[in-house]
Amino acid sequence: MSSSVKPDEEIGEAAVEEVPWYMNLLRYTLGLLLLPITLISMWNVVQPNETLIVVCFGKLAQVIPTPGCYPIVNWGCTFLKLSTKQTTIDTGKSTISDLNGNPVIVSAVVNYHIENAVKAVFNVENVHNYVHINAGTVLKSVVSKYPYECKDHNQPSLKTCSDEVRAELVRELRARTKMAGVEVASFDLSDLYYAPEIASAMLVRQQAQAMLDARQLIVDGAVGIVGSALHGLSQNGVTVTEGEACRIASNLLCVLCSEGHTQNVIPMQG
Image 1 (cartoon, helix red, strand yellow):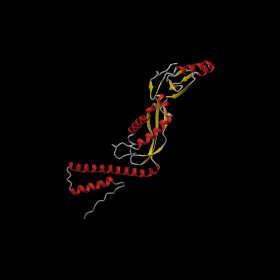
Image 2 (tube, one colour):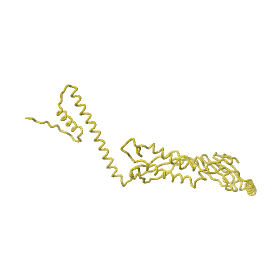
Image 3 (cartoon, one colour):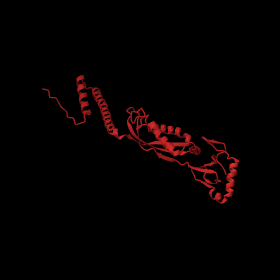
Image 4 (cartoon, helix red, strand yellow):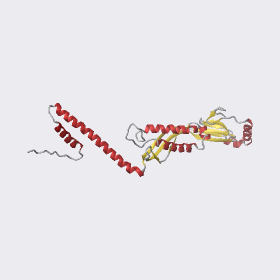
């Protein structure tokens, strides 16, 4: 029997140990006495991306991560197989308050694989359930640190800083699951929107903010056009009094900033 891990080599909280000689003697004696059953049941197949852990009389005896067929006398032994394939979980939708206290609906997808099978088996009760629960906890913790959106584009928010949020999610989940032998590959938000109870109010606020931004853009552009017009008149030798400049600016701003169609009014002086 070959082992990929040497005796007394520590793997997390558990270490491979030599099985005492008298226990091995008992195993092989039972194997000889029940030879037909032993020959049939002693073959253990390890598939690709799978690790076989052999526990003999309560002691970690072997760890076999290499695919193949291994003959092991099974008397007194427990065989634990664990897949090391990439695994994907969905945290499910949950309502979380962002930094501003607004409830948002958030869900995420986590991709991970088991890097250390011994830690995954002996350090936690159910490694996949452990990752799932901690992913939900980390999601709530990180989302509550950011606002859903922010007027200041230099301030990070959930909508604009997806890379930063993703990196923090991965970092915190890795710290929590390291002792379980899990390597987190990615932690991505799949749903992100305001909760229904405030969605309509937030939509009105967004529309109002968009209108204000549009108005500000129009005014800034109009002021630039008026300045260019007065400067052009001056460059072409047209003398404009201060009062006339004010009337020109007022009329141009009225035409440029008006939403509807404007009509020229020519004053008649007698």
